[in-house]
Image (cartoon, rainbow, N blue to C red; front, side):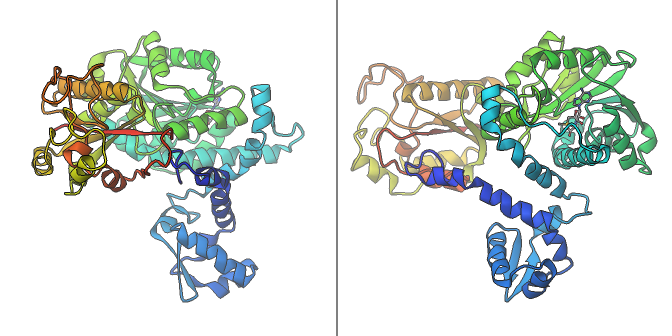
Length: 510
Ligand SMILES: C[S@@+](CC[C@H](N)C(=O)[O-])C[C@H]1O[C@@H](n2cnc3c(N)ncnc32)[C@H](O)[C@@H]1O
C-alpha cells in the first residue's frame, strides 16, 4: 500500500480498493479453494469443473491468488503455497478460515459506519426473532473466530513466562473457548484453570476440550463478568484478561479490573492482552471502530490508560510488551518482585520506553542494513544549502569513518517521527539519554536534517553545544532511502515542499 507521503491519489485509490483484497480471500476460503488443492495441487480445468466456474474467469482469479502469494500456478496446474497450506486448510490445527469468515460476516456492520457515527453506537442488531439454533451457530462461529486469533498470539506470549514456575489456579476471564489458558495448562503441569464466560460459550468450550489430556484440570463457571464474581477471593496465581478490556466502556473495565484484583493471590500475576493505541496504531484505531460498529460500548484504549487503571486497582504493571502481531501485553502484580522473573528483553523494554516519548515507529534493525555508499556526500556538497553548516559536510563524519563506527555496534533502533525538526531532534536526544540510562553506555544517534538544536547556531567551527549536537544520517554518508527500504519502509522524494513529511533517526545502542 502507498502511504500519505506519496503526494498522488494512488494512496487514496489503494484505500478505496482495500475491500478487493478481502473479497478475493473471502471467496477462496468460503469455497474451500485451498482444501481442494490438497494434496499436491490440481489442474485448473478440474478445479473449474468442481467449482462450476467459468474456466477463463477462474484463470484470472488464480492469477491474483498467485500474485498475493496464496497459490502457485504453472502450466495449467495449481498448488497451495506454504502459507495457505499451513493456515487455510480446514480441519488443520492452525486453520484461520473461521476468523476470516467472521470478518466477512462483519462487513454488513461496517457498512453502517455512517449511522453508527451519527448515533454514537452500533445500529445493527441480530433480529429479535432469530431461531435459537441460528443464534447458537452464530455464537459458535464467533467463538471459533476468537479462538483462531488468540491461538496465533499465545506462542508469542508464553515465552514471557518461561522462567516462572507457575503453580495453582488460573482464572481466564471472558475466556471464550479458552485457548489462552489451556496453553498455560500445557506449559505448566501444576496448574488448573477456571474459565469464566457466558453459559453458551462455556458449553461449547467444554465440548471442545473433552478428551484432551488437560481436560480434567478445567472448571467451567458461567458468569456475567460485569456482576460480582462468585468465586473464592485471593486464590488465583494467574488472572488472564485477553481481549476483554476493549469489549467494555471505562466504568465496566474498572469493575472487571477490581474483581480481578480481588481474586488474584497476593503473589499472583495479572495478564492484560489487548489492542493498545500505542502499538500498531492503524490497526488499533481500526479495531476501535470495529468495536463501535459491533459492540454496545467497547473501545480500544491506550496502554497508558490501562496502566493507570491497574495502578488505581493496586497493581504495579510492566510497560506494554509489543507482540510481533497487532496486540500487546501488560503484566501486573501486587508485589513488584513478581515482575522481575518475566522474560522481557532489555531491547523490547527500551523500545517501548522510547516509543512513549512520542515517536510513531521504533523498530530494532540490523546494523548491517545501514547502507553507506560513496555518493551521498556529493549530494551534500553539490545541491544542499546545509553544506558547511557545523555538523554537515565537510564538518561531519566521513563515510569511511561511519562504516568503521558501525562495526562497533550490533544493535540499533530506527526511530520515526514528524517535524518540526528541532522537536524531532530533541526527542532523539531524549531517546539516546533514555538508552544511556538503561545501561547502553555507547548509545549514539544520527538524525534527519542539519542540527537544529540551538535557536541560534554558532556557525562553522563555533558550535556552542557539542553536548547536544549530532550528525545527520545523510551528512555521515548514509543512504537513508536504501536503509529504510531494506527495513521494509518505503520513502519517496517529495514533489512538493509542504508534503506530509516523516523524519527518521538511527539510535546505535551496543
Ligand atoms: C473478544 S472475546 C475474547 C475471548 C478470549 N479471551 C480471547 O482472547 O480470544 C470476549 C469474550 O468475552 C465474553 N464476554 C463478553 N461480555 C461478557 C459478560 N458480560 N460476561 C461474561 N463473558 C462476557 C464473550 O462471550 C467472549 O467470549
